[in-house]
Image 1: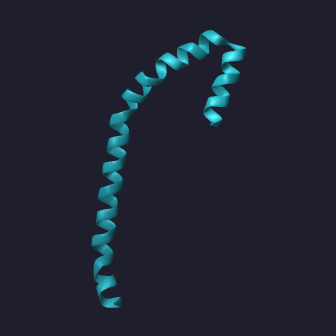
Image 2: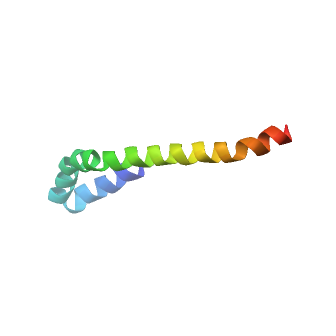
Length: 62
């Protein structure tokens, strides 16, 4: 919602820049998609390693 309101303000102040942002947004999203996928993968691997390291402690504590 905040992003939409900021875009509306930009549309009022400088409509060519707002239209350029509207057109460029999907391309920027596609460009950043591989970085998001890498981030999700790294996060999953780190959670897996954390679970593996904490497994003996959880097994002894239970």
